Image (cartoon, rainbow, N blue to C red; front, side):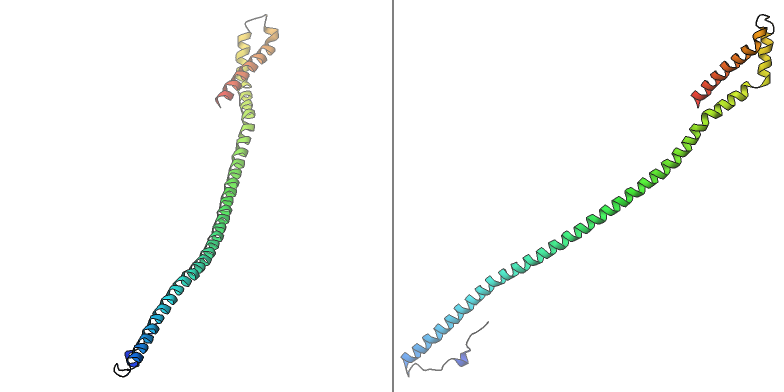
Length: 172
């Protein structure tokens, strides 16, 4: 970029010989130097104008590429997040279904067996022979009720059994 003329290359003209020629040569050298300065300034300005344009175009291209890459990475991350979320939801649903099936099955079995077990206990308690003899001894003193003793004992046992069933069923 430096296009200066060294002093040793300048023409060695003496003022005494030809002052007009010397002045013309001097003027020519000065104008060459000025024109070189002007040209170098123009080149610097042109280069500085061209460089930013090229740099901005290159920067824009790089920014566009980076933005596309970021968008692709964001899409991939979103897809991965959706997949992870779906997988965790599926696991939770399976665990819930498995535990509820186990709990529901056990609960259903207990509920199905609860009432028949209560009835079995009540029937076993009422069918104890001692209870029948107690009722018979109470009714033996009454002659009018003697023919109906079996029906009265049966009715009394059924009322006692129903009240026991109701009481046990409410507490359990």
